[in-house]
Every structure is written in structure tokens, then in C-alpha cells.
Length: 361
Image 1 (cartoon, one colour):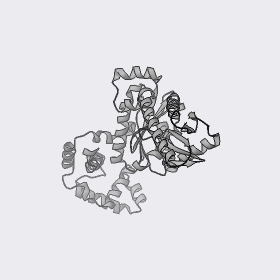
Image 2 (tube, one colour; image 1 turned 45 degrees about the horizontal axis):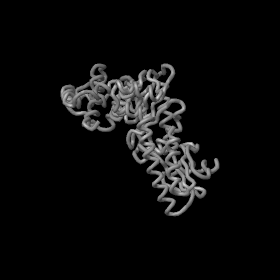
Image 3 (tube, rainbow, N blue to C red; image 1 turned 120 degrees about the horizontal axis):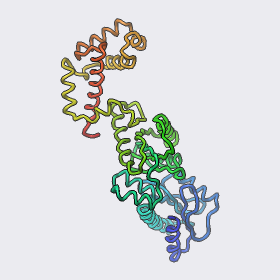
Image 4 (cartoon, one colour; image 1 turned 180 degrees about the vertical axis):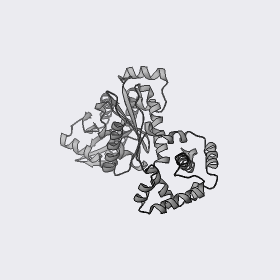
């Protein structure tokens, strides 16, 4: 237990200073202490205050400091007393505790082990042995959710996800970068995509309500081996990247539901450009005005039904036919013919892909 490591540091510190001090976990549970121990009410106030600020602060005569590595706040330390001398000592204690946490995480922590698999830092023959040492089930169904948020909200969003997916239920919440957090969730049986999407929806809604930021979630396919999580991470990244190109209005994208966007995303840009030149001999899609683009979208949404499309657009049927004729004159494709409508739909998606600057994806 890391509490033993923390206790050793506090005991060593107490040999040189005469302060009451200790370390609490995220929920206010006392992990290690020297001297007088705060009451349950006092530790509860310390943790409650930590949820509203990342700065050091005084609480009931204790100077409180957040302890965390890898962009996460996992513990808080306290030292009883006030003044600059107490603050300096608390910062020294913070450095010692964070170094111990980093060492402990690298050697023992399951979350760090999972993170190393995600980032490809473990060889296939290494992770199985490490999994046995850490008592991590290898052959269990897991799904991965990649959550992207504004970089300035990473700490708040991480705290929200830690509460939403407790470690006790064999979940892992991992900070990957300033704007990316991974949630790995374990399942006992096969689940439908709709159930995974419900989990992603709860992530988006909770972060929006508690952290007050917008989140986008990419969902991987299910994997049955812990070593496949690296592949799942790449799948979730692809899901978000493809969704950002073709379905910007969606905040939840599943890798298993990418459709034709998956194919276009994997095509070389030169091939995409040749395709547009081939099928749009008369003119470019970019030459179509906003009203015409809206007409096309509604026409596709209504399965090429002229009557229903004109009704939803509140225009006369003849007006819609005139617009479709105009599109044909500009592009050379008649959207009333199924095969040409398919070509035009793909051309619109390819055009979106090229305008998204694929080299940056």
C-alpha cells in the first residue's frame, strides 16, 4: 500500500520538525499521519475545499496542499500551523510525497500499467507478466471511451470522471494529455453498441453539468484481452477524428458505426482529388450556395422523396425541382437518379475530408 510509503516519509520528516501532519486520499480517508489527527469533520472540509480549487489553502488551522502526478490530483497533505515557515515546509513535503507517488505508480499502480499499454510502452511478452503481478485480469471484456475536453478543464473533468467511474468497480480513468482522458470500463458479458453509447452520453452530460464544459467521446469496439487496449485507444482516436470531419454536430462517435467515413478517411488525398475531378466535370461543390446545400441535405434525409422534401423546406414542389435542375447544371449529377445521388453523396464527404486538412488528422 502507498500509505506505508507515505507514512515512512512523514515519520522521517517528524524527526527534524515538530508539526502535526498527514496525507488524505481523494475521499478524505486518512492514509498516514504524525501527531494529532484531524477530526472527521475537519478532513471532510479539507477534501470539500479541494474540489473547488487547485490552489493551496488554509482550513481550520491546517495548511492544505494537493498531491498529484500525471496531471491528476490523487491525495492532499496537511500541516498544522500558519505562516511562511509552515508553507515552505508543506511545499517540501509535497515534493517528497509526489516523488514517492510517481515511484509507486511506476512500480505498482494498475492505472499506470493500463496507460503504458494504451501508449504502446509495453512489449506483448511483458504486459502479461506485469498483469499477473498487479492482479489485473487479462481476458475480460473491456470498452474504451476517449474523452476530449478543452485543455483548461482537464482537472475538473478528470475529477468528475473519477467519481463517475470508481476504481472499486474495476474502472480506470487515465489522463493522456491536457485535453484527452481515457475511461476503460469492464463488462461481464457482451453489450450492445447502444449500451456503450448510453455510457458515453452520461459522460457528456455529467461533464457538461458539473465541469461546465463540452466533451466529445469516441467509443472503441469491445476487446477481450487487456493487451488489445492499445488498439482500442487508436480506434477511439479514429472515431473522434472521423466524426470531427463528417459529423461535427455529434459529440459521441462509435468506431463500429463510422460507415463510409471510415473508408474515405483512409484514402490518399491525391486519390480523393482525382475522384472529385472525375465525377464533377462541370463544377465544384464549393460553388453551391448555402440554400442549395440545405436543399441537398434535406433531399438525402428524405430518401430522394421530392414531395416530402418540399414539404419540410416549405417550398412548392416545382421550386424544389428547379433547384435540383440547377444542381444538375452546376455539377453534372442528377440527384433524382439513385446512382448519381450516391456519387454526389460520396463526393460531398470527400470534399469535406479534403477541406479538413487531412495531414493534421
